[in-house]
Image (cartoon, rainbow, N blue to C red; front, side, top):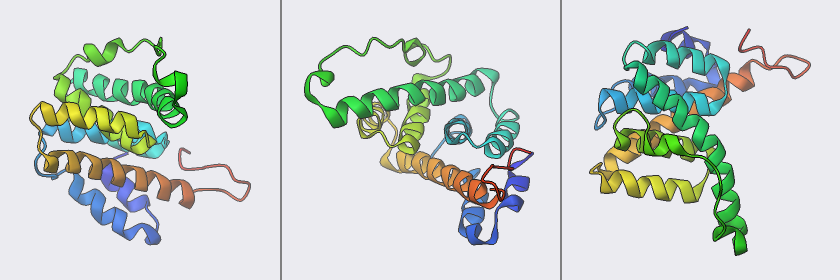
Amino acid sequence: MSIETLKNALPEHARDLKLNLSSLAREPGLSEQQRWGVMLASAVATRQPAVIAAVQAEAEGRLAPEAVNAAKAAAAIMGMNNVYYRFSHLVGGDYKTMPPRLRMNVIGRPGIDKLDFELFSLAVSAINGCGACMQAHEHQVRQGGLSAAAVQAAVRIAAVVNGVAVALDGAFVGQRGESVAAA
């Protein structure tokens, strides 16, 4: 599956998403690795099989294997961290001061430029809605030299990829409620 196939699978009510999806590969202000890494990490974060397959197929042709792995690792580790830190942030109290006792080694050694990994993590955190993680990763990428426009571009990519996943899930729900998008 390709991005073009993905666009063609979108229902008419998702026309804006189709147009936005077309422009993602040309998103200015990001390197090729940043653009496609954010797109792949975001796709994995959506958990939507057709979106993951299409984005991964194209990203693998544009990213080194280490960057593909890092994008998937960012989605996985943020899947854990976003739950934990959103909880401790929202509930507060003793939880904010308690050590998380979660292994997060990949954040320190992602196998690619740390700034790019932080950007992938920011995009996934935006999809998952963890304010504490978004703030922490945004701070890191801005300190690392990325502009506000670059951060916005990454979050725009995450938003579009997530919207495409939502549209596909809604379009491909069978009469008994099961998704047939992966079929």
